[in-house]
Image (cartoon, rainbow, N blue to C red):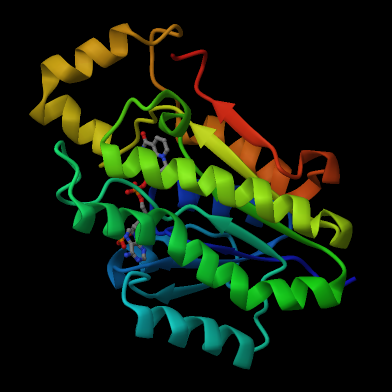
Length: 245
Ligand SMILES: NC(=O)c1ccc[n+]([C@@H]2O[C@H](COP(=O)([O-])OP(=O)(O)OC[C@H]3O[C@@H](n4cnc5c(N)ncnc54)[C@H](OP(=O)(O)O)[C@@H]3O)[C@@H](O)[C@H]2O)c1
């Protein structure tokens, strides 16, 4: 069987990049994506060989997203694995909830992934297998985050449940990994540590482990799932939050 190719959305830094590095170390050809050419170049230079690729794209711009997906097909860079890491809190996501912020959040945390899956599911069906891993959030279960973010990640869980049931017979694994707070360089929480130290400290004190998660802890799980995940994992929503409530 041909070599695995993984498209990881939002992989120029943070969790996405660590997942990409771990997949590459498992002999998977990876496709990195992000909006900054500088970050992508820097990210790619950390890979030991030059067989991997990186594309500059703003997934929130429909035309850019479509062009990238068409280009991958044209170049026969058809992913056998999709890791939907793109997501996060959008601007204006505060109480009282406004419908525009919700729309943006649904696009960022769900719709873009749906569009990418729509493009590559037919190829996975033809191949008779495929792996689709969505990065969600434990906030989708606890409700403890900005409202539009919580709603969009909860909707993502519903999408995973229904899609996994439909595609199980085709050996396409579809699941979600739901991290708790992760702190890494330049991350939202690294910024909060500087800009909202009291809030940061309060959250930290609520963590049963006495610390936040690391991207490496989440990426190990995701890369194992992407490389070796059994079909018994399909439909799973794997909460990785160190017992945080
Ligand atoms: N951080 C946490 O505490 C936490 C907790 C639970 C769940 N999560 C989830 O984990 C995932 C990753 O989080 P993270 O903290 O690692 O994110 P991050 O540090 O903000 O990294 C996001 C990546 O996505 C890229 N990106 C952002 N907007 C983009 C766009 N419009 N088009 C293309 N690429 C874009 C960024 O590069 P550019 O900015 O250069 O484009 C970067 O490579 C998200 O789904 C998030 O919801 C995070």
